[in-house]
Length: 314
Ligand code: DO4
Ligand code: MG
Image 1 (cartoon, rainbow, N blue to C red):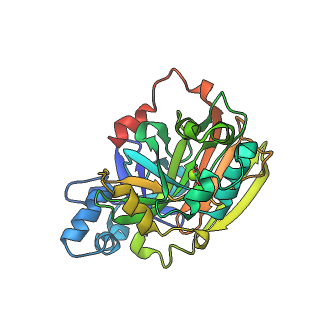
Image 2 (image 1 turned 90 degrees about the vertical axis):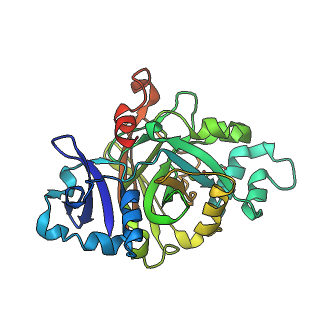
């Protein structure tokens, strides 16, 4: 079962069940009309049901408004006040980071080689809701980097106690030259205005057969031509999801709806860098396709943080 969050014509934020091309609105069927998936998760738990059982019992097909998926103004599917990310969880990511550092690895093992095999994974702070753009809205590239890529990643949608409520598709926009210059620049290589997106849906965890066998596709388009296509599978992950979540919540507290990205395995060719006007499509067929155009930050700077995210997500 896939859940989306969207804005109605009356500018109300609601949840919907997405089935094929149709979306069935469910917030109006709920006692408190909530548009917060994690609130539903807790209600279902209180009734001793899984989230999909509880939502299934709402008889949404018989009762609620139906929309065409393509006509919807989608929001991020959960209110993620924070997005965290894992790094170097796939062999491809380790190799790409080593290449970015070039001659700065002086014999022996790089920090990336070490973290790939270490007990403690790399977990870093990626984004706030005000820096995270919804599906179909532009992500940005920064002005002081000449080597920028999307990082297509499976995202875990978490409750505040670290339970995996569902899976989503994430884009960890990254600057390879800033990180390659010095790993201490990681926050600047990862966090800037509109440098993260996730969606379009949350696929409820209990409805996924095997989360370690999900295909991830990334396609990048320029002038209506596909410039790059890559594919990976979560079976290539070095870490388990439980392990990543355990380190995220260790001596830490997280908000309901926190998203934890699980790392990239798809890296475009080394000569590739994103440009304004490109379109990035990241698809996990069990979840959906996350599509974002690319803009220079200069197009959005000075206009304040994405206000609709702040208003709608907080
Ligand atoms: O070590 C830096 C970041 C790694 C990362 O974002 C990834 O592996 O996806
Ligand atoms: Mg990443």
